[in-house]
Length: 281
Image (cartoon, rainbow, N blue to C red):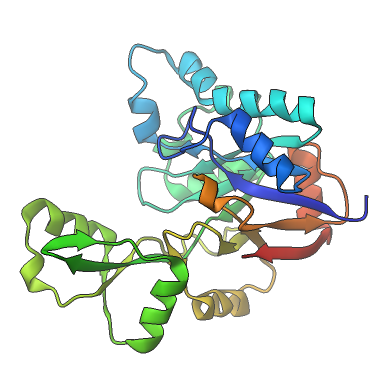
């Protein structure tokens, strides 16, 4: 196989609360879109597990794996490779990290990694031979008001165009905006606003970053990505769809020069110049 199309940031409705598509339909959609493999990277954080009441930790991990296992079974039926991954978030920040090389055994052995300080969690992943790639490291959203109500229904290309036209747009943290929504204190802001959702974290500990994220509800400034890569030319650069809903299908991905049947082969392809191109739509 000369070209192998793979998306390493995909969510399922069985596990990710924000996921809008069941695992079986996710696999069928990617198969029809001409992809040969995907990594199921459902959200792995404290809020998710705290919401699974009346379960012990073993049962919670088993529940978490339902989306992946369903996708894996359908992938085997259709001939599409499905790899286990997680989109990890610890309790310190709202930043997310794609973990390549994760296993079911590791999740059962270390189920509450989200309670660890971020650097300690990254060190633990590395000790077990995993790659840590920060997802959408400079993500933002443009927030406006329409008819007296908050409005954020812009697509990523629209948000980037707004920034080009008005580079002076005020930037605030996502947490600050949530506080304004809670208290209805919108009058103190001049709209539109740029809500900063993610920032590069533990940059000297990372193996790479997601240079392109196809989820069009958010945006990343290419100039900021370039600045990061100038500081860290050693980073693995990934592109992915961040699939949550049908409109996100195949908007990103990687084209490898080899087949990737499991997380260890994915790690090898990322580290050993297996990347032919990065899909960006």
